[in-house]
Length: 346
Ligand SMILES: [Cu+2]
Image (tube, rainbow, N blue to C red):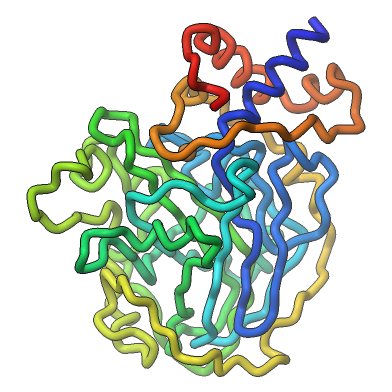
């Protein structure tokens, strides 16, 4: 049992994908924690911690909301000003820590947490509106590929956004296996913000969606052979970018902005302070609601690195497995296929 768990643990972290590691708002930097699997005792953060590195593949899973088992809140909230630049750096456990998928869109959503601070907000209730989507450049390369050299994804908070509490959902969709249904990989991430400003910009009712809910496994932007697009424009899944965003000073067209606004961050240094509010980390650390899908049995076609990271867990394996049943399930699912998947660890 013990050795099985040890092995399983190695297997599930071997399929290393990624998490949002750094969120920069203007000149302020917020760090995200590695997944619970690597970091069971996370530092306080504004970024909701995901359970493990595996991609979300089921468009109906609650993991599509904020990442794997990440509905629960993080403890901190970042203050940002409307119009601030956001830079989001994704990391992985392989390939020197850099993101390694390079085909597929990146999309950014906001959801109002209402009058509540977002560190008390259950993301399953979120009604999302899209503020940015980035697909292919004119030369056919995807904006996502820029992450592979360590560059952050760049988005701007709409300058006319109404002040309030917002959950920020930045999502990478990796499409290297998307030619078969269920092959697309979703990497959502949620960060907790309080946005200041005097704008009145807000989405219309019809621009609000639920996630899961807004994507279908057969959407043309999800079930797609990106290596044979025959010159056709990519169709982003989900709703269009909310109309009010195009009226913000930082957005040119409001949609498909492959070249994100690079205006210097006008953010005043004071605009992005961390507010430490009620500590609710235990909710994030212990939330494990959705069972892992069989997605863990698939490997990525993209670059792969050998996962050498040891188990950095002070907890005894069995205690940990009991606390994170998802791990055990994912690992069990992986085990059944690992022996026939020779490239799994490479
Ligand atoms: Cu992947």
